[in-house]
Length: 600
Image (tube, rainbow, N blue to C red; front, side):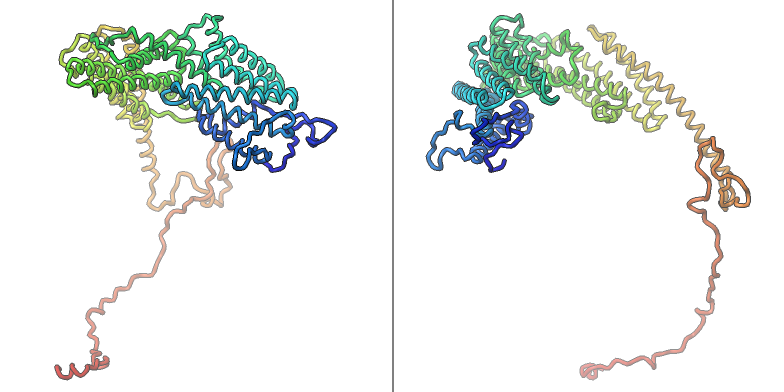
């Protein structure tokens, strides 16, 4: 930012100086676009409110320094921003970023790992009050010093901050509803004018405000929305929804705590395990509620990406429950009955976690199969290979083996446990067949017909064996039986294709070999078709027929080897029989020293 105090032409409608006595300039700020840009570039793209708060603090420091509006060198002296003070658009920026700093500080406290405690919550509400104070002053001064559009945006921003404060305080829901509706009405009107980017931003803000309005209607009693249905509202992303999501999660946690009070035991495969820890009950209930979203009536229409997010939340809830159970085990002491119950509960939770892991990996298999069917991914044009499915089925085999070992580890087995172990064995056989099928696919892609043909036959035997065992079990396995029947059909067709391709390639190889053998020449001079340099005396085209696309045959490259003459090798046989004269007399003698004379 420049050090001069004169605002730029982009920020002020009238290019004249603020000190002019003739016309009072009207400042212009695109509030929503300015805030969105700052938030996305400084942390809120990833929900990092600490980074954004630090940016606002640094931004305010630069503004104060450039405006020479500091608050004393040693002792702090308060300086208020009034109507007469605002002679530069940067004074309005000071108010706006002060409100943003207070709001981001409150949101930072809201996102603490265990949630804000009573003292932190009081501080949070105090920061929101401070944000409302700065936003109200910003709106009031924009109504006097700024143009009509800036004044309208400032009013919407102030209404949004008031709604956030009342939303967090859990009181005056009707006033909060009016504040959010007022902000929505302004952004709806602003979304009809201006450039395309500004219209998109206004519509996004309207969509972000909609969940908070619906929640306020629910609290006021003007909506028939159920508490469980509120989870479907917060699917969108954006800084404006973070407070709503935190409030919604608090409401759902309170509902789970009330429901957990009636949950005294966990039923699993004929066993009943008492659940005495309230935190364990809440974690298990949270996982069970999320499982309803996966197996409910709307599960078929739920996209795969959203299902994977739900699976991650389920895993987190079950891991949290296991952590509480093992903490109870560490403090159980020598009470054997309590320890046995906790060990059984830990086993049940681990088994449920294993089942959900298998379901998640099956979902990944389904996604990979759909990508393999169309060969390329639409998003990043990535080729899906059969080896990826082989890896996923390896994971499924490992998950099934771990789950089977866990269920079979007890002494007194219930009939439900025996049937569950049989089901795991059948699933293992089915997963082996599927894995072998995609191994055969990978061999087929590599051109190894004999190996692929043998593997397809092996897959068919495994699939028929698994199909026979699934039909003997008591239960609803229609999907597995249908998949195995389809696998048998694919194995039969693919084995026929591999057999035919193998015969064709073998015959083609034999033809190529015989053709190459018939064209072998010791000198390399004879060819089926001569080159242009070999038939310069014949008027014939080297390009060939114009209707046939073929490479022109001008010269052989690289040129063939040719035999050339060289000088003969002379072998001197008389060299070994010649006696040469002695040259010792002509050799220089070495002179010895005094000692050599003595010792000779």
